[in-house]
Image (cartoon, rainbow, N blue to C red; front, side, top):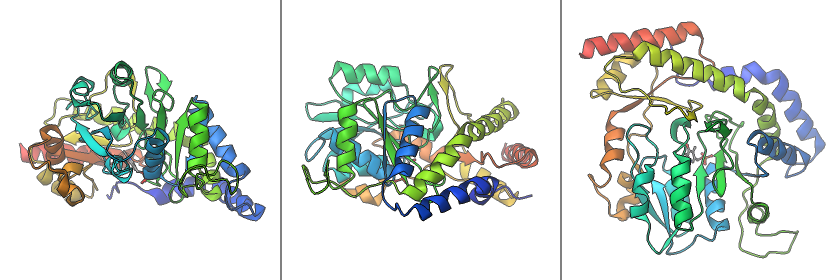
Length: 369
Ligand SMILES: *Cc1c(COP(=O)(O)O)cnc(C)c1O
């Protein structure tokens, strides 16, 4: 039996009958930029996140970049980011001309450790960017408390957490701004690149609408040097259709996660730790093992595709060779990178595939003991 890590083709086939007429209608409307399809998804997603405003943009990286610019982050400023994240969180800061100041994760949750933030704040700090990594919300109350104490805005990178809840409330409006990616592999994914920013701050939402459109609040009036980073109407209609299925897909992910947690309890794996007040959406199901690479090879041989999120932390990537943080600078992130492994948790998996993953993992663990 083969278990692919993610089967986007099956997910598409499941709802093709809804997506294709919607996309066709959008194409035939002749509205190829902006218009009611984009506004319709923005309203639906704002509603879903229980937040006042949603601004659709071209992708998750630019959502972060526009959010930083809208908050005035620029040359010479410092922004607090996780040491353990996908590199896009860092790239957005760098592309504003600002400097990343990494904060290590709580090794149990993999998310930014709030107790380590204060020590990273300097007079040049302009924002804190926690990531809701692997689909589990970061420790928002504590992060927002440090931010408030220092008068700093918080930008949540929620690229992996569509639908996740913190103390019962959906992610999207806890921080000053919340950024989203709808890259096809995310829990809510478009048919190509797409992204958004949500906020309860009307003035910031207006600024973001201008920034995504050449810095023009009205046509040919350019108040600042903006970007071209718009959400495409075809992506917007596809997202609007898929949003109606998101909770069902997230529930399926949660059911697979619950099954894995039961099946692997007491094994040699370090399992995901979910504090009671968090409801993750299981973008990824990450485990740790001392002999991760051997485990991965055994799973591959058994037909189970796994991935590593992420094999090299941003500070050790060639792109940050000039950052000045060598091996040993961020040991929590580096240890995670050496030990972590993502098991398949695709909502399209059937029970037989799920059971095959469990059997293959238990067999591999036995062999490695
Ligand atoms: C996917 C992702 C992004 C970037 O999103 P794109 O749409 O691919 O630009 C940013 N941050 C995190 C944590 C991500 O997982």
